[in-house]
View 1 (cartoon, helix red, strand yellow):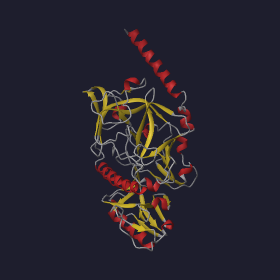
View 2 (spheres, one colour):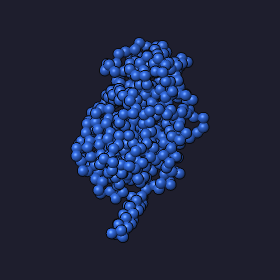
View 3 (cartoon, rainbow, N blue to C red):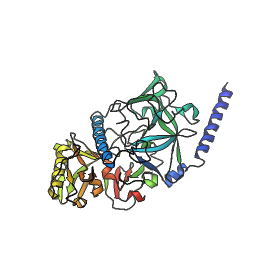
View 4 (cartoon, helix red, strand yellow):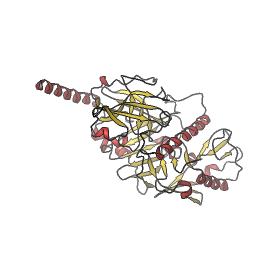
Length: 447
């Protein structure tokens, strides 16, 4: 019997090795991924390449919809920050701004997932399915993957994630439970399998033994147009954290302004993720709960020569880590009292009378048919150690042929969110080991 088990184990090991060879035969090796780095395309949800794209929507409608998603998301971020010890590991199920193509298993099964810096776990719906929401792509069948492995409940990987338990009391496999702020949920097996990312070089890169969630009981308002979530946050089980040693803790992204068609945004890992140059604006990442979010410290915002310092009355008692950098939120959201000071400073340098937003969403708007001085609007965001000078593309949103609005919005929170609109045309680099974020102005459409 022991001999039979040994033979069986050897056979499994052999098959595992062969399967890894097969999947990586045309892949970038892990060594090359670490030393040379790699990049993956990010698909904006309104891009023609996205299944969320609605050809009947105007770019103006997309801007308004993005603002409403920003409001919804920041409420969920605030709820998570108010109770960081809760089991809500992820923020929102269906309102991500960017998608990423990845594959799970051996042979690889493709999926289009929401790429979210406000989430950690990588998961997809799996067979057998007790309860699943509709999705257009086939469900992942773990029994067909030669590299799939259910994690025991006593494993270190199981204890590394909040919201896990044992399928059998005291023994058995590790099961996870994620409840989102919008009451969507996913329950299933925490497992290991190979994740393959499609590099922009044309050669994919495979990462074996990556922690994933295999969802057998899922529900809520998930869209059938995507088939999972790739967590890019700072928690233990996020893609970024799991790739940590292989990418030397470095990743970056370059986001193309939304109106630019047929250009692609990218996320870069390893040496590709290093922001080149010296003396670049760089600010410390602040360690706070929940670990999912990337907290930095906002010290002031300048409009021309008028510097508006952050006040504790607006942002709360703790100034350190008072704003989150988030690619899943479109616009920058600030506490109302502080945002009012920014809007007042802008109004003082614009020689025009503000007009009401016809949709009643943006705080400060102007009619550009009679005034055209907004391209020269001089706004700088002052993080600790990093002065980030913004362009008109970062600070202005056009909502009609004649009306433009300021891309800052006031919210009833004591925490700010630095959205991706102000990050476009910057190479934003994260160094998890050195705990910094850097900003390099660049034309992302040329990358």
